[in-house]
Image (cartoon, rainbow, N blue to C red; front, top):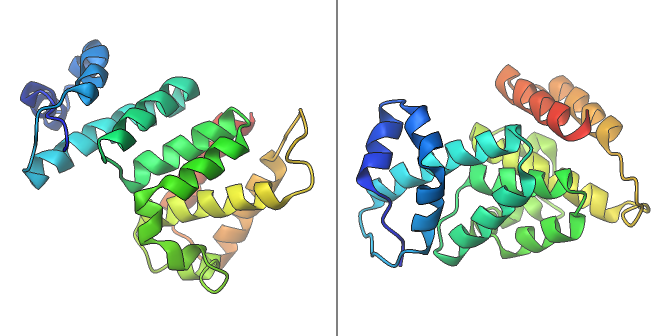
Length: 194
């Protein structure tokens, strides 16, 4: 069962009235707990776009804890997308909670759809190039988190993976990733590792 978001919210979002979204953010988040059924997949897609906008905004504002709380609520009503998952995992990195990120990776329904890419055979940055930008970004983030998990200093109090992240961006540029992917990863790196 999926909740029904107020139609006015979706309408205002589609009209690019982001101030309305900002002014009603608490109401939007509270609607996650509502039990109204929604069977229209088009409406669900519109709702997911609103949440993706909220997640990107919260990530850019470094509101990592709030972003994780919202994601946990959305998972309970089985609402997930590649960007929602990616921003949540990045929020975990921002909080230096790799174990929480690994927990979300293991529970994610969208990552289960991409399990081949996360296997030994598929876990290769070249393989991700054939996918959409949203999937590429998510898989890059998951692979980076798995690298952190496998490193020897995961329990260190002062985890700083900024150099590794920027080296990864350089490697992805050399492989041939699009300017859009490189630009977005650079923005993400600035937020996480400034």
